[in-house]
Image 1 (cartoon, helix red, strand yellow):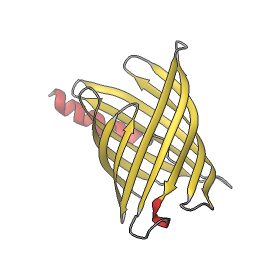
Image 2: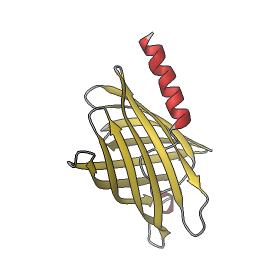
Image 3: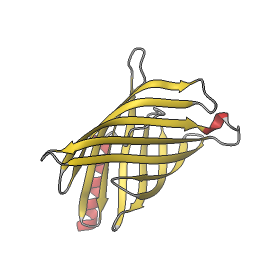
Image 4: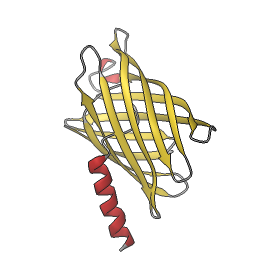
Length: 178
């Protein structure tokens, strides 16, 4: 019964939490990944590109669960300052922020997100690498750091990815683009 409730909770959370770690390559997608911190974790989330004039804007969210229940949740937003500037390979830079809720604390972070599109290096590399670093504070005033590094390999409307972040240090999964 507890595992069925966990599965139901993950499905409901994914339906309501359209967000993930900030990314320099905005795309509407739902993702699922399995990872490891001090035990195995499942991460479910999504990103949604919002229409904004003259700006690439993305909101997202994710929930992280382990066998004992929900471990963390994150809501994030990204605004790209330089969406794919004229460098080789194309480089993107943006400002991102998030609210992260963990079992033991809640924190707010603001930082930079950047990425490199490897497709322009070689047509055989339909991949991107992006990173986010956001210093912040917990609600009790302690320093907190949100971070993520992700590599995605695209195959049509699906992206395979490997990531590391402050909520799931080692994870692999799939992104379903829509």
